[in-house]
Structure formats: structure tokens, C-alpha cells
Image (tube, helix red, strand yellow):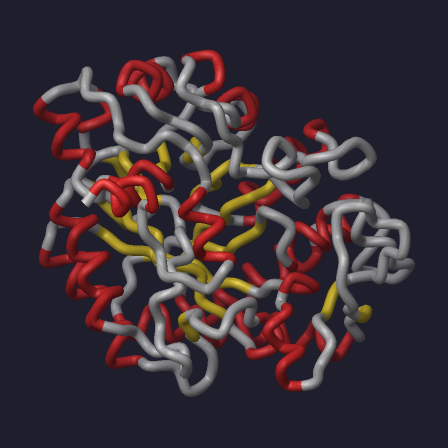
Length: 369
């Protein structure tokens, strides 16, 4: 099967086409350092057959921190712990990319330091977001860009095989890209080119630190979850522009969130084939227009659909999140039995537990123990 054949992203050779999509785990310690439970999780995914593991989100600057138990790759990061994560992946035969993150207005944890979260603009009429935040200054944007560049240098130093920018799901990059959340009148707002300036300037800062051979990926939200936000037509143009900028692979997902859960990346009720692969049509359209690998994500539950996406050239890789929470070794199971149905029922109880401060786990399976 083609999904089990080796793949490549720039200089990174991968044993198969399965990607573990970045998944917040709530397992770091309170300083942002790596814990033994995180090392065990990465080891289980690698030994379970995942070709490329994308880490949990890691903040590059304190202003972007979204949770008290979130890994840091900012100044003062736990470099020794990050190296252990890399070794855990490599010892199981997988490659590992770090996902670099800034929450923008979603970075509510900064309020504990008596600061307001930052965003491109303050939108008073937003029906999908509640909470105080403020508009970033030009100097603050420059500081964040530099923080991404320095984090990229650390990522390469500790041995991550690649890095991925989180440019989806309503966090800082999505907020800049969406015309609904970005209402600036300066060089950071208005046209699509201006709303992508952060993405392009961060790329340049990272490339300067990592050199030309290091794979730089982005998870890109190409359509917002509500009317009046980023349209798919603009999202496709954005994907093409970022591929031309130099990003080495694009994981295609959704942008600023609308109503839960249908207006988000966390769609439920996807047991039926018609509900599976819900962002695949977007990946297919972008694959036609770019010359870099495309990673499809969103509700994949059957080997037939994943194999078809690769065989038909609709995507180069397929990315999974919730099924790997329930079964970190599901890739190996699929290799033995392609007809196996995953245990994940897409109930989102794992997400709801995370929001309440619990660490990542499959709540349904834990209740059966």
C-alpha cells in the first residue's frame, strides 16, 4: 500500500506517509519543561508506527503561552528535555518535528501575569470569542518574529528533524490571515499579501537561523469556521503564496473557529464515510497548485480513504490526532489488518478533559479499564 511507502519532505526521509498531527497533551511541568510522561508518549507513537511525529505546541515567547502546562522552546527552554523527546522518537524509528506556537488573543494564560493577550486587532463584534485582549504594536510584532527565529535555531540545535509553524485554528497566524480578525490599516493588514506578512517574515527569520537544508513546515488554516471570515478561495491563494515563499510542506486545516464543534477542526459524528476526511477536498485543491508536499488532516478513520488520498495524488501524507490518543500503535495494527476500525469514536471527551486541566487521554477507554 502506498501509505506505507517511504516519503520525503526536503532533506527529511520518512518511513511511511503517516503523520501524528500536533496534539496538546497538558503533560509538561509548570515551568514548560519536558516530563517523563511526554517522553513515554513520544516513544509509544514512534514504536507504534508513526512516520513523522509533530510535537505538542511549544510557545516561542511568553506572550504566546496558552496553558500553565505547555512546553516552552522560548529563551531558557529545557534543552535537555527536548533532546530526550528527539531520542525517544528516533529510537522507535520515527522522525519528529516541533510545532512552534503563539496563541495571540487565545493566550489567556498571560492574564495570570496581569497582561492582556495580543492580537492583530481588537474585534468588538466577534460572536465567537469572549475575553479581553489588545492590539499588537509594530515593535511587539518584531519581537515575536525574532522569537520564532531564535526558537527555530534551538529546534535544530536539540536535533528535531524539522519544525512546523502553527498557522491554523484561530491562533496568532490565523488571526493575522483572517480579514475578520485582522482589521489593521498598516502594512500588516488589508490585502492578502499584508495579512501574510507575518508568515513570510517569520519564515525568513527561521531560515536565517536554520540554514537552507532544514525542513520548515506550516499547518495552515485555509478557511474560517463561519461566514464572513477567511474564504477558501483566499486560503488557497495563501497556501500557494506560502509554498512559493519557501515553506517545505503544508498541512491543510481550518482557521479561526466558529460554533463548536462543527465550525472547528474538532468535528464529531464522523463514523460514516461521508463524514470522514473532512478537509481532504481543501488539500486536493491546494495539491493542484503547489510544488511542495501536502499533508491532509481531519477525520481520517479508514485505510481505504487514506490510501486513496495518497494513490490519487490528493495529498502526499495523511495526519491523525484523535485516533492516536486512543491507540498510539494503530499504524502497526493497520499494517497487519487494513480493515481494522479505530477505537476512537470522535466524542471529543479527550478535548473537554484537557480544557478542564486534565492531561491527555482517551476518556472512553480509560472508563472501560
